[in-house]
Length: 612
Image 1 (cartoon, rainbow, N blue to C red):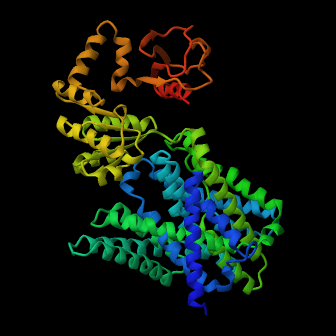
Image 2 (image 1 turned 30 degrees about the horizontal axis):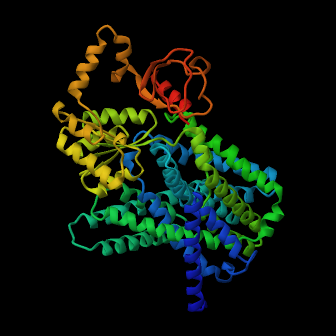
Image 3 (image 1 turned 135 degrees about the vertical axis):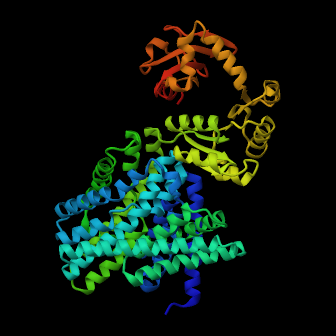
């Protein structure tokens, strides 16, 4: 039995390590999971021997189960199916075809490279098939990739975690009980059915409870949710072992998609709880690592893991999204982000002990390979994801649009097609639904409410665009953005419906336009000059863009010496207070403002070329 004081000392030490990891993460701008892994190895028996989880393995198993339950539920809670329109097929492909390809690929590579029995290779393949929500979530939130890519990765990690657990349990049954082919199919279908049923019932039951109008405090709502999470897992496991993770994933997705009182309170609470639990689990499991597990495997193990990350993962992603609308650079980024999390490590340790008890060789090899896979993939992904995202150009601008009417919707759709991260706020449920149908991230509420603005992501937004039909309201939104969130005037773009109100916006430095005045100016210029100004039309497929020249590679070069994309044209350069008509011999200088016409994606390509 563990001494209570010793247990409390351990908990305090783990909390201190968590605090240290988060501090280092903030300072070095790297995911805190990397520092948790390093801390766990250092305090473990292999280095300082301050923490040895093997001495209380049964307690550790319970702690890991509790933590994983909350982590998986929270992963589902962050998913709103209404916001996933347009990427459902991608997620489904990654969670079915992708899982199968990954499993088969890892199994084959392990069998030939590590030279272990096919059963052991298959067990390892099943264990590390899934990416982990405990790792993917923090990485995505840290680097802020485009919404669709982030949601695909988060949704995939939640569903694949459950798929991996079921697949691992089936392979283990095959090893120990000589499960037949039909038996394997029945096993999988049973676990899928149980997980789906229990998770769905739990989600609908809790949603029903919260929408009955029963008056409870926020604290009670959080407690009821936590009890429901553990009850869901226990019930599912009692009916069919290894089905609990899937049940929790489905439970979380239903609660994340539904609307009910206390939703934001529950999400905030679970988000804080998950940070703590990830810290506990990663330090504890990293402390269990024994170096000789990895040394026995040798260089072949490192080669295997690199092949999993750089060969199997990309093949799986491209094969399961072959007919997808997501771009090649986005597929490449999804391929790179494939870290394994806490679930394979915790399950691998459990199954290794079981195999040893049965006298079946290979348990320690599996543990060594799993630890090696988790360490390398977490370190690789955590340290390189931001740089890879920048190279592949999947970190877009964050743009917040207030007003989901026709103008706001058309604008949001254009930004979305450009690959930018756009969010829309509107008080009307009908307008919000229209935006959601277009695959736009939407928040329903009054933009005067600071909480609604924060929920929509104003703290990370580079620009805020206001498109409502009320000028006084638009001016108020701009003033809130400047006073509360530090927006400069050139970061605010507002629609002004009455021409006489333009001066009030301009006096505050806000970039404002009047539809009436703009229509008149454009129509005036289209007479005799229609080729240029037809590009301004929405259906024209083109754009006029102003870009500041900051790329050292083009500064000092003449326009004719720069390899501009096809279907793009530099028409004017503003240098200080001077406007210069562009010509082939004009040399670009630092901080010039170039006006560019581009068709399709050419405008953005020129922007990326000039502004680095």
